[in-house]
Length: 598
Ligand code: GDP
Ligand code: MG
Image (tube, rainbow, N blue to C red; front, side, top):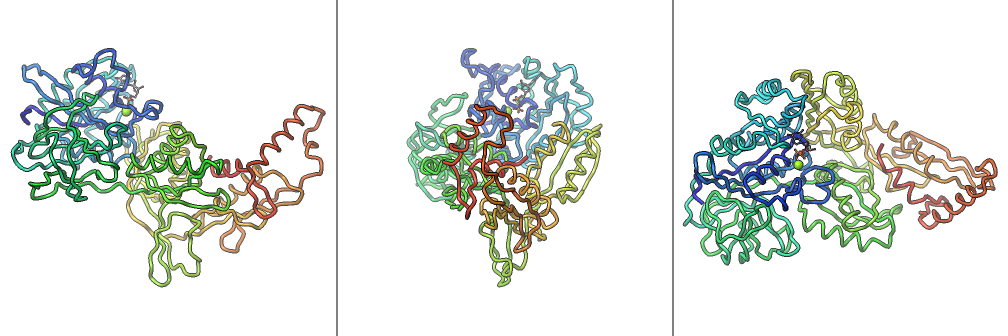
């Protein structure tokens, strides 16, 4: 295809503003799928994505459109995930495009991820067409939202389109705007040595690793020998194709085009996104600028509930990592939880998605330990250690300083909930940087320690604002802080899986919370059990679990025999999954519940 008739674009939006619905509608209108094939949100094909209505992996689709002027165009749409954890996927997709549709819910207006995503698009110089969606809703206020886009984002919005992705209203205008308002890709030389950007890669059960590519120069053909310039590995191209949205093979892809290749690449790790693909015999002279690698920022331990499932878990984790290069893992052992894995994630949602996939797709029950961030520990001898497991904390006398990651958070919230959000941020050691207004919504910028955010921040934010706040963050730097390791002792024995690194000012509160929880979770024994939180040798919180009277069924006042029997049965079943700590037996469920954040 002549590059002048190609348009490569993304859709960026805050979650739930209608990206996927609009994408479906564009596919439908251009005839990408028959009515029968058209199920809702074709692009969200991972089961979890469908269920949660979120897009995790970016998807691509090629559309044929005959414009009102009679010209035929090829439109390549790359759908992007909307959630902060997957911001790296957004910027990756954007760099394969010349333009973006900025979708804003006309009833809700600009939200935190609208800003984050549109700024990412502006950063890579994309032309932006604002689209006001959901104008079928009675609450839609297109004029107000238009003004808001201009005030808050600072881009021209008087010619923003008004559409309803749901009813299909205005979809043709969107297609015309793509053709006439977005630029064509630069015309590269089709006979030059191949120069293509590896935009994304994922594992396909039939074809092995599939690479999504954007051709800059030259021509990609089946049977060609290609080299991945970053890794230096050479491959034979087994197939070249495009997504419509199902995979269709094509003879070749030329400059400006987006499509895929498969080349018997075994692991996703070997097809690094951001790499430049060229010809083995006739390499291009320079590499394309790549992407910043996605680095894990949140860590936790994953252990099988049943120790016999360890091998299954290993298998599942290895297979998942094949398909998700941003997920990392290493083996870990814990006295409390046995054998498991220490895993790294891009953020809390990523953690949750992986955990759910392991439980669901691979059928293993998991215990997840409290999430931790990466601390930089400077030792007295000058060495700097990256620590992401509190259990590996060196002896405090050898530690000079501990630094923790800080983030810049942007929060948009309706005025009436502002007070609650301010308090939450202050409680979490936040430093206020900005407070401005966008209509009746406050826009807050705070610097916060990431450690305080991974610990139930989203949930608290949601509950203090009844779900009306939106949130986005970026890592800024590691800063020194008064951080300590807090241990939990049950009957004077430390329980490794429950230790955590906390700020000294927050230690007492966190310690007290944990002790209170454990007191309810650990069954009573024949003797008194102290439950303590300690920093070094100093106890900062303490609860005592009183001793059990001889007759366990005495608890059941009244003579309900069936209830008594149930209690005894429950005790018997529970026995099987007990872990021994000194003289104390702690049921597995107690760990699960204690580590669950609420
Ligand atoms: P995404 O998270 O941006 O991909 O948003 P979705 O496309 O999944 O849409 C989120 C929700 O908004 C879904 O329940 C859609 O049915 C609904 N929705 C999308 N577009 C419209 C629209 O134009 N009008 C109305 N009323 N609802 C819409
Ligand atoms: Mg979506």
